[in-house]
Image 1 (cartoon, rainbow, N blue to C red):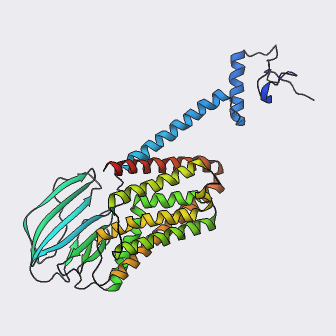
Image 2 (cartoon, helix red, strand yellow):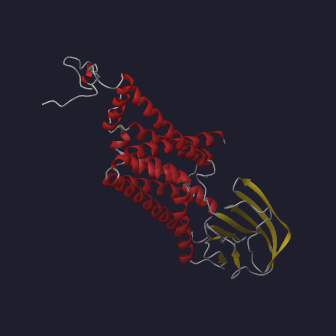
Length: 387
């Protein structure tokens, strides 16, 4: 039995047309006009997920506009994101001559500056020579410096930022004898004690924390790891790709640290951005037969060698304590790996949760993330090539 067709939606015999899904003639006698019936048809088709071509175009354009707006916001956020820098505020106290020290600092501004220099707390047996000077180097960052004259040893003295809020900061002390030491300040522990000779455990703990910070707040390495996990779907493939990436950048980091070879920082930074663009393109293509999809560990290893130069540059900027270079290097590398594992687990858990709870969101979310990563990395690439 065939039910009534008051809107005249049913196709007349022989009127199915090409593809079998075009509208047939409306039955005479329908109480609705042709325009009203067409509108109802479009709504019904939309509800069934089979929009007509014009309607699909309209909906498609609306979706693209929303994605484009989201990506433009992400691109705007890419400008202040210093991709390969340690993001915390920092203090460096370096000895220039016997009894003469230079205090320099970089401060990230969580809120507009008061215009007055916020000088870090320096050792009590030091006195300033002149006034502190600060200058803005970016929208949310200022650098400052102050000359100090210090009497006696700085061992046991304290240095830091008593008012540290909402972020961590690094402190580096560089005496003339070369026994550099680095400390991590936190809002709960904003002051650090200067040690006469930093112990191995103190060095290992500080550099482990620095490694974790670098991978979590070094945006280019972070985006590369995220893109790699999104590209490699199966769990065992993720393990192999992550292991290859770890092994490769560990080799480069060690070789550069011990002076076997090195590369200029600018080309390395540009190449790192290009590696992220490459992964984003592979994600967008969706080609399951590509070399990257079939041999992700090989691609991860090749790019890991490149990213190792970036890690080495960050470690060079921090400095290594004399006599404890191996301990600092191993601890920093382990910290990088710990941060990397956290990122990989977070991405996997998020994707599995999305697939289980809201499976229809996974595909558009992956597409949006892919284009966001690609646009941000392209911006970095252009910026670094121009620089």
